[in-house]
Structures are given as structure tokens and as C-alpha cells.
Length: 620
Image 1 (cartoon, rainbow, N blue to C red):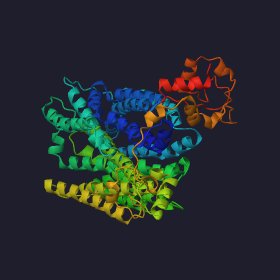
Image 2 (image 1 turned 60 degrees about the vertical axis):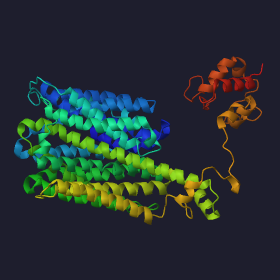
Image 3 (image 1 turned 45 degrees about the vertical axis):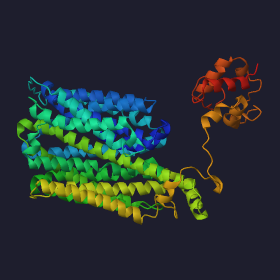
Image 4 (image 1 turned 180 degrees about the vertical axis):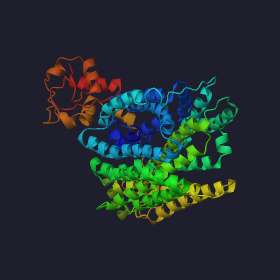
């Protein structure tokens, strides 16, 4: 169920934006809220699991997760959906950290790699089914079906969660006198603040918003406070010494997090490009996305066995290289024509991740003492969720920032005195869909691939066997990743056929334009639209908003609007009732709808405007 979510939700983002009347920067919190709620409390819940029994915690977490998942299918606003996703994420925080320790309890130490490989296959199986299933559901129904259709799976999972472990597996209880509740709260709040800042500050004018800065700075301040608290805690949720004194554990954890930080380019931006930009059916996109999951599904068990024989670090190094190659092959996706190259890219990507996952998890679990196995298990989930959440926040803000910049520059250029060729270029830009056009989405996708490929250099270097690490090596690795990422994105921006500005127009020229220059004439004073609109009488309001359906003479237009002259509904209603009806409208599913036509509401009208419109419709 957990891996299904990772492949379900990103494919539905375009549908969520349309249906819930929201935008990219808001809808990404359907994923981010879930990730934060799953990551912050995860380590604390792992300690609680030790107290009540890991099998018990697994069952309870699965129950919370399944109930919230079903409720998401009934959400009617983006705020409610985000809230339910937070609850769902908390359910995941309860069951996910127990899975690795339960696996090591079932399998003997010499078969640990095999056990983790089987688990990676189960994870890949969810990714395999997710895109195909989601594509079919979006074609046949809508995004609600992505949650409602999994209710049977939730029932089965809950049933198994409470019964399959029997009376012995996962039933051991560890008495604890201290629970680090403060640490869990500090970790959750710091993650929320940091991710909120990463996602919001780069877009729109949020860098001028004191509230956004306050939340981000809260995350910056609370994270070191969390570290100090953990060092002093009687029973910390994170043993900081694991990072200070265990370089092998530290490197494997960073490599794992960074790998997941690169996934949003493939799981978020690519489906958006294919579905919205290239107008490929979600069903077909699902099959494409499933290619990587199929390969990972078959590779992961073998990777576990190979890691037990040849060494985990070698497998991780090869896997990272192949993952980078898979990303670079995605750069060849054409704007028009066959996308066969993506099938090859996804297959290579799947081999790479399949070779990386279970060997890396084996390094993490084998590099800690047995008494810290539960903590290490929880940290695997935390590494995964934190990395993906940070990458998702950054990539989502990058997508929004690029779209905002394109729109700002091209709209601004349209208000200038420009050459005919530039005017035609601008007209074509908006005709093909503006910031949601194939050209712009392909541009953004390639930028995200360059960024994600560059950060994978950190995973690559941290996975190299027998490489001696120091502060200088760590800093050099991060510097190299930033240099390659920024340099690659800058170079691509220069050689790309699509530019941030129309031809023959410079950013310098755009910045000096302070007022619109319409039709090659001097700039006019800005018009106060609200004041001008407020001065309109009832007839003007009707003509500008209602006549398109009901006719200029209230005669009603076929298939659009009913006749309003001598209309019984209008005659038998008071003006106050008419005002309320105009404000709310009448959807197609309303039982009182007798016309079979949707009437849009006008909640933006003031009470004065609604009154004038009601007087025009019912003058007596």
C-alpha cells in the first residue's frame, strides 16, 4: 500500500489541480504533508513499537493508514485532502519502521540480504501495479478512485497485520522508563519548517513574506536544538553516536537519502510532462512508469544474494551509475513522435535502483550493534522519507518557479512595443498552452533531470568501496554536485531552443517597462477594476455574466440556459432567494436541477451586486 501511494498520487496531480481548483505549489502538499507526517514521528513510533510489540504496532499502523486512505476518496477540497493525507502518513510512521526488524526476526543473519531483497521486491511490486492501476482509474473515473479502489486492499492488509505474525514473531516487549516525546516533536517541526521553506520561498513573492520566513527559520533553529536534545536524552530516538563514530552507517544513510531525493524527477515531473504536455493517456503512461518497477522487482532479490557474495558497496556503486545513465537517457525524450527511448531509460533506471536498494539497506543494518537494530530499522524509513520529501519540495518549487518566470517574462514582453516577429512568437507561445505547453514542460523536465543526476554524484561517491572519507572529501563531493548541477542547468538554458524570453527581447528591456503600452500608444493609467465593476447596474452585470447562456433578451439559449422571461422559478422567489441562488448556482447533481444544465455560482459578487442583479431579473 505504501509504495502504491508513491506511484499513484503524482500521476493524479494534474487532475487534482483541475478538480480542486488549486495550483502546483499547493497540490504538492498532498504528497509533502503525507511525507512529513510519515517521517517526523517514525523513529519515536519505532521506540513505542518496542514497548507494545512490533507486530502489534504494525497492525495498528496499518489500520490507521487504511482508514485515512479510504477517507481521502471522499475529500472535496485540497485542504481536507491534505489533512487526511497527514493522518495517513502518521499511520505509515507507525508500521513502516517495524517492517525491517520483523524481517530480520524471521530470517537468520546469514540470509539478511535475501530478506531485504524480498522486501525490496514487495516495494517494487507496489510501484509496478501503481502506475498501471492509476492510469486505468484516471482514464475510467477520476482521482477519487485512486483511494476508494484500494479499500479492499486495506481490509486485507489490516486483517493480515493483526493475524499473520502469530504469537511469537514481533511479540517481544522492551520495558522503557523514558520516551523521547520532545525529540519527536522537535524533529517533526524542524522537518516541516525546512520543507515548507524549500517549497515556498523560491516561488511567487514568498521571499517577501515574513510568515514564510518565520516558519523556515523555525525549522533551521529547531534542527540543531533537536541534535543537542538527542545527545542529552536518556533514551534518544536517534543515537547521534551512530553518525559520529560509524562512517559506514553514515555514508550508507546519506547515499540512501540522496537517491530518494532524486526520484521526484521521475515520479512527479515526468508524468506531468507526458499526461499534460504530450497528452498521452494516463493508462499508457502507467505502463511506461511500470517498466522500471518491473525490472526492480526482478533485480532486487538477486541483488540481495549478490551482495551477500560480492559485497554490498560494489553493488551500490554499479546501481548508482546505472541510475544516472537512466536519467541521462530520459533527456532524449522527443517533443513529437515516439517515446521509445523512455522505455529503455526506465529499464536501465530500474536495474540501477534494483541493484542499490537491498545492498544499501544491508549495509545500514549490519553496521550497527544488535541492540540498535530497531533504531537502525526506523532510520531506514526516515532516510527514505526525508530524502524523498526534501527532493520533492525542491523539485516542486523549481517547477513552479520556472512556470512563474516563463509567464512573467512572456506576459511582460507582450505589453511592450515589440517587433512583429516577436509578437507572433508570443502569440504562438500562449496559443500552445503557455506554461502548460509541451515545450515548457519538456524544458522543466530536462532541468529537473540535470539537477537530480548531479545530486546522485553524492550517492555514487559515498558508495565507492574502500574510499577514505574526511570532512574535505565530504565538502568536495557536495561542491562537485553543486558545480555539475548549476553548470549543467546553465548550459542547457543557453543551448535550449526555448528561451525564458521571446526573441529580440532582453531582460533589461523588460525590467524598464513599468506600465502597459497598449497598441503602440503611451501608457494609460491603471483602471480600478473593482470600482468600475461596482458601478455597473443590474443590466450590465447580467450582460457581462449571464447573457452568454440566457440570451441578451432573457430568451434563453438552447442547451445553455433557460428562458428567464415569465419564468415560474423567478416569479415565485423573493429577491433574497434569487440572490442566494445566483451566489451558490446549481450543479448538475443537484436533485432540484430539472434542466440538465449546470448553473455556475457567483460567490465573488458582493451583496450590493447580487441585489442589483436580482432587481433586474425581478423588477417588481
